[in-house]
Image 1 (cartoon, chains in turn cyan, yellow):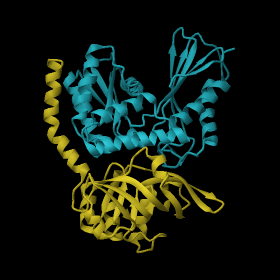
Image 2 (cartoon, one colour):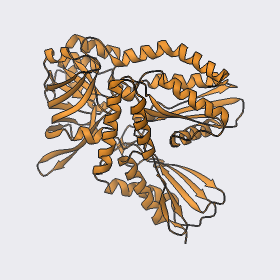
Image 3 (cartoon, helix red, strand yellow):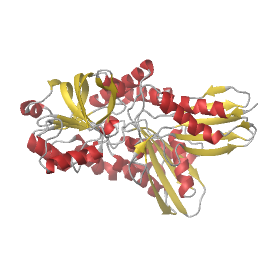
Image 4 (cartoon, one colour):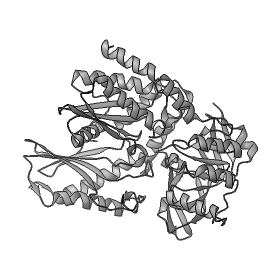
Length: 289
Length: 206
């Protein structure tokens, strides 16, 4: 017994469908909190309509957004869990199952960047990040459908021995560039250090972190707090039509690197699509979110 | 905050009463698309003085993607939702002027050149809720026409009948006022102060 092809295939499909129809509870709580603190009437009303949209989607089994994005998964494999079958193929087949069965059907968003042709399949799709977790007897699968609305504003720049001021200045530059356009209030993921590829990966990990958790590193915990305050002083507000709530959270991760220090910044829009499940070797599947 | 209820097609007088930051609820017919190829094709028609398959003169053209499919009684539209309008900045001033559009919209706004065209022509930009699929789609009461069906669903030119669509936010009015420009200018003007506050907080944490 172990985690099987069939299990991974089924869970991959379920996680994608659920991510399209259910805004995470943790995000709904953050939106409700924002309604309490928001001082602009139009912004408060926009936040309330967001909540209504999320509640209606969940209640009536509907898509929250028409842009179902491209399939992105993060898979963490415990080294103590046996596996049966082609686990990599299972994710691809799971997404194909979802496309074939989800109601209402989803639009074609997988795009060939060389021709701009769109469909449901494409090179390297789904995009999967793999990690190992020593000793764990489970596999965690996180699904994060990603679309242009907030995806296009992600950026990465490489600095040499940047001060915290330079790093924070770059984050604010990215916030200004996105302005009103990324369906705020957003969550902002920031990666500092590592290498080009690793920095983007940790920024993505940061964006997927639930609200209410801060980085255990004290320098970053303080940075997260002050950057959130700074971003919300810009005034872009919900849907970018003005208000105090441009971001619901700024999450920062770091990694050691060389003196060349990449800083990556990415955004998730207010619906903050994210689901995850834990699969155990004995067949149990636990939905984490 | 003022909420207007208006019937499409909007008159110039209707449009001129709207101010950036107002809310609008719409009834009537509108045309939507989320496609860059669609905009290219509209441009080609306008350049060649060829009629579009749907008469957009004085109408409403919104940047909304939709899922249309063949049903037993013709095309049905299962859902709709806005897309980022700034992708179409280059096309919109020409469309607004040449077609005399009274309303455009989507999410994220349009640039200054578009706002100028809107002021001249008497046209507003309406901001739809991104992630508003369940609420926006509920307002669809009928499918008038689906054109350019050779394109993928969200790129098609879809004309719908809606009732109680909104509230939508007037992002850019017909008097040259754009929430997007104002907010960006205000944020840029505040940025030196924001950076100074970040510096002060780094030096003496709250």
